[in-house]
Image (cartoon, rainbow, N blue to C red; front, side, top):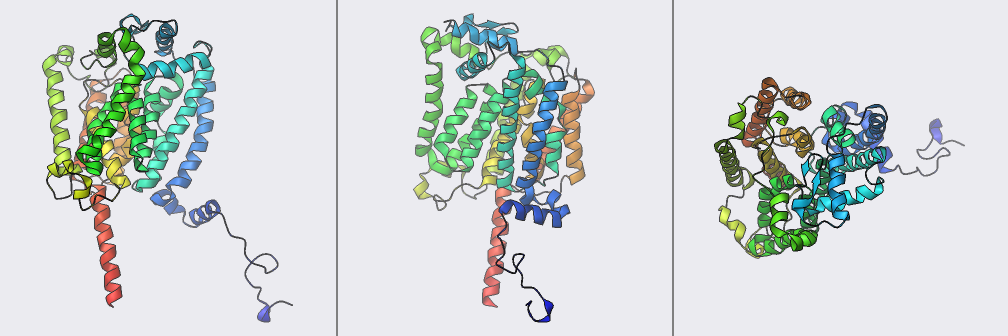
Length: 450
């Protein structure tokens, strides 16, 4: 008989014990009940990220099948690594259609693997699907970063995944080496977030060995290492980075060390004005002038010093305290928070991009996936939400204007300037987190007293 009053006990269909729901079904249920929070609450980033990654599988397949492939550097890459495979280890003798080999040794090994997987580089369609896999892995790693930081509202990720024609083109239609370097970089950042610094440094150095732009994060990484370990314990981490570079480059260093270092780490390399995205409004002679390059380098170094002193370092102690042994620090046993790590690394990378001598179209992936954090990561009223969306749109428009124009270059610099001010005047996320934690502790204390 049913219970008194005709009421059925809660539980299974026959009144038995209820079946526990899985975490995924619970997230779906809460998300459906709170549809607005699903788009605005960072706690739902994982759920929305999983849906967007699945959608990107279909989008990537459609792009590969329907949009014509554009040959730019792939054949040159294959020619360069083919020279190494055939026994040439002198970097000065390795050439491709678009010029000499100018990337470090890690590039050679990875693209040699692509060379064999794609039938000596001739199977372009298979290469595109390999890069589609890299794209999905990149998104998974990025979403994990945003899940841990909990700063960006989920609706922003629609713009990050679905609205960027240029990024899909770089990964799926151009097959540049930039995406390869970036996916390895994001592996290293995720390892840093796990407090696995040795492995993180290993993969960071591996990313540098694919393309030099990863060095833009080096100032921020050095600061984090000093902050976490002090000077003496940072040295072994730096040795991991340096030793890997030597091991990877050893066959080339034994053949022609000067040629290898000059070609693969050529900091003075000139860029063609016709491909610049960020300096189109300058006369070409100014773009190529050494004084202009030195001015940008000086501005970059000043910005790094200012951020290090006033935005990254918020402990109230002297910057020289970073050099102390961790045992001498009160917070020595504490791991760095996810927001501390990401704020430092992403802002370091952004400063390098902002003051770059030239940005080419494939360089967009250097900082594209970090833009949501750069805009929403700091607690500030300087930029309202609509203005941040507008900045994302203008940046995308600038990178999709080919060839670049005076308007597109100026718009890009204005957006970069707004992001810089947002980072400078906003409350750094670690400070915001500690403030909220202190406030919560104070409330708990008051409740206990009451």
